[in-house]
Length: 172
Image 1 (spheres, rainbow, N blue to C red):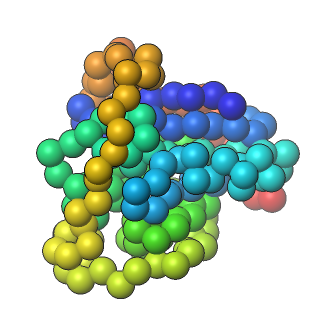
Image 2: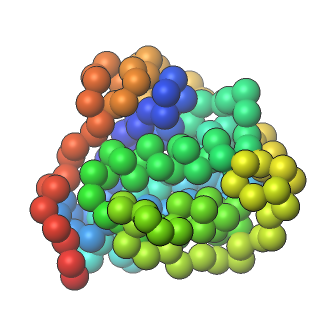
Image 3: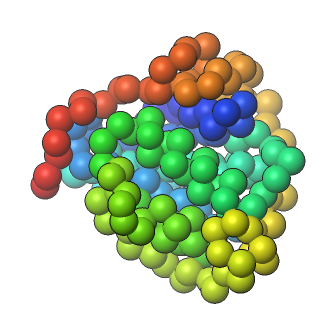
């Protein structure tokens, strides 16, 4: 497993990646009061066949706290991770993570291959926030993962998205 930081503007997001480079990508989005660790067992079961990306949403796990926790903010964070994957990926979510995944999925969504959802709550107000967009209590992190500044459009200290995987088409 590799831990990386993906940036959405100045927001640093902690991501774990495991599985073979070149395998079909899957992004897993956790629920409220959780972290990417929610997906640890799933990632271990999938890592032989898939490249599994697990994200700590803003204000959760080792990702930075933020001034805003609207669904639209979480969607933008997940989109930043999808952009760093560079090619279409399946993504799945649990509870609010399912709302984020569903918001990313409508056509045209060139970076989305599939979006299985788990216990998606009803969200009032849509992707712009409204009710249901206020998750975010989390432990603070002193992880080295979060010590580098973010630069627009890329990982810490760079000006380009993370490109650690092949950009070739990947149809299983």
